[in-house]
Image (cartoon, rainbow, N blue to C red; front, top):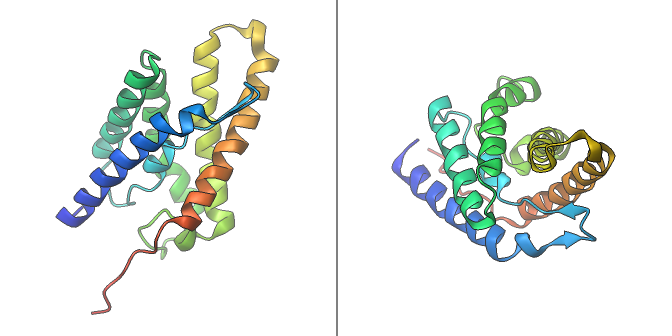
Length: 171
């Protein structure tokens, strides 16, 4: 990562934290679907980021969100896990000659949608199963995971389309 990439990642980190804490935290549908928009930050980290840095960024993002949600490491665990499996998902879904961006415009709607769906589902599964810590509420938890995954995915896709295109230099 070059300096420009690092600065843009810091800006996006702060932006996603602010959006999650002050907007998305209050977006819930009937106490069944919740929006965890901040995971899009992890989705969009460049391919060439070292695994250690990716895991650290996942942990830091989760830790910051945990501090605002008072969830004692649940968000951190989920973020570290999706940061860990993300390279494997990218490897399976992305052709070898693909670019280094994980955005909908670069990957295409179907590939990005599947990429985001898998990671969002895993993230939400970890959060909601740790949160209830009991299989007594298994079906309620599955319903929360399903609807929250769809809700978060729709919001992330909208944000992907609304975000400005990156300007590339033609050398």
